[in-house]
Image (cartoon, rainbow, N blue to C red; front, side, top):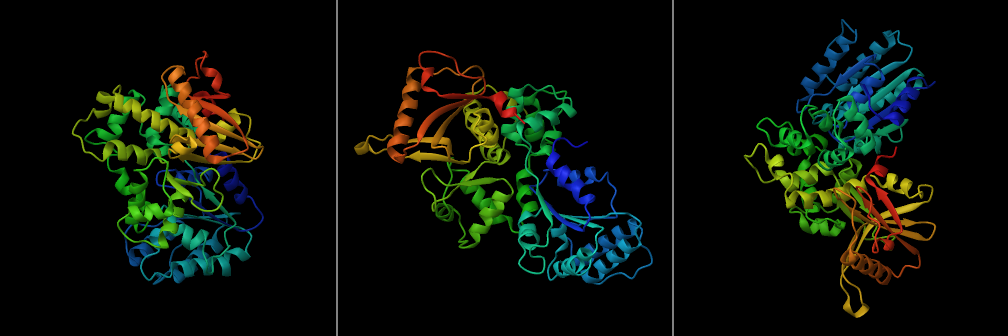
Length: 473
C-alpha cells in the first residue's frame, strides 16, 4: 500500500494512459521507495521488468537480462554478446506482447553500465531509433547511483539529450506523510514523538518501516541503531557507495559540512577536504543537493556570489553526532534519553526539521502566495558599528518588502520568553538591521513545538508557528 506520493502516482498513471511513448527517469536517495512506488502504481504488472546487479561484470549483467526476458515470455533466442543485441531481443519481446501499453521497467540501470559497456549506445538506439517512433511504450528507468543517472540520462549530452518525457525526484516524506505512514503500522506515537523520530530518521520510508509498534521511541532507536543486530548501524557506509560510483569525495564533503552548522562556501569546502577536486567539486555538490543531503542558499543580501552549502540530512547528522564513536551499550539511547546532551541535540535537530518544512511554515504565516527566498544569516561582532555577532538559521526574504526572521525553539511545553531572552532577540533584530542595512520591514517569528507563553516579554514576537502547523498538508 502506497502512503502519500499523490503527485508521483498521478504522473505515472498519466503516462500509462497517454497517446504517445513515454521515457521516464525516477531518482532519489537510497531507501526512499523508488522501486516500491513504480511496482505499486502498476500493480506489479509489466511487459518487461529487470534490475541490474551490483558489482558484477558485463557477462553477468547480460545473463541476468536474458533471464528477465525469459521470465517475460521470450524463448528460443541466441544469447547476446553485447547490449545492442540484448535490446534487439527486448524489441522482439515487445512486438510479441499483447499488452495495450507496453510498460518497460529497468531498475538499477547504472549497475548495468560496466567498464567499456555499450549500454548507453544501446539505450539510445532503442529509444531514439525505435521506441519513440511508436505510441504504446512506457520506458521507466531507475537508479540508486544518482550521479550516474543525472550525467548519463537526465542531463545527457549525447544521443539521450533532452529525450526524457518526464522525470520524478522522489523526496523524503514530510511530517504529515510520516504521520500517515505510522498509522499503517499502528504506531502509537504522539506528534512530539513523530518530530523526534524525524530528527533521527528524516523522511525516509524504509527507516520508518523498521519501527516496532510494541516498543516506545527510545527502545526503537536502540533496536535500530545500537543493538547487536541493529539494521542501520552500518547504513552510512552503504548509503554513499550505493548512490555514487566514487563515494570517497562525497563522504569527504559531507564530513566537512558536518562540522559547520551554517554551511560553507565552495572555496571553504575545498580547503577542508583532503583531496584537490578542482572543478569536480561543483558536480559533487550538485549531486548531493539532488539527493537532498544538502541545500544551497545565498546569504541574505548577496544575490550573485558566495552561495553556502549546508548539510541538512537528519540521518547523516544523527550519525555524526552519535554513531561515529562506537559504544557497546545496546540501550544507549534509552540511558541518555533525558540527558542534557540529548536535549541540546534536540534543539539543533528541531531547527533542521523546520528547514525541511519551510512550505508549511509559509502556509501557517499565510505568505505561501508570495515569492520568497529562504536563507540563513550571520554576522561577526563589529563594536565600532554597534553590531554583536549573531546567527539566524531561517530568514524568509519576501517580495512584498518584508522579512521574517524565524527563531526555532524545541520545548516540551509552551516556550517562555523571559527578560534575558527578550534582550537577546532585540540584539539579533538590531544587529540584522545594522549589518544588512535593509529597508524592508522585519517581522520576528517564533517556531516552537507548543507555542509561546503570553507574558510581558512576548510582545516582541510578531507571529507564531507551532509544531502542529508543520503537519499541514
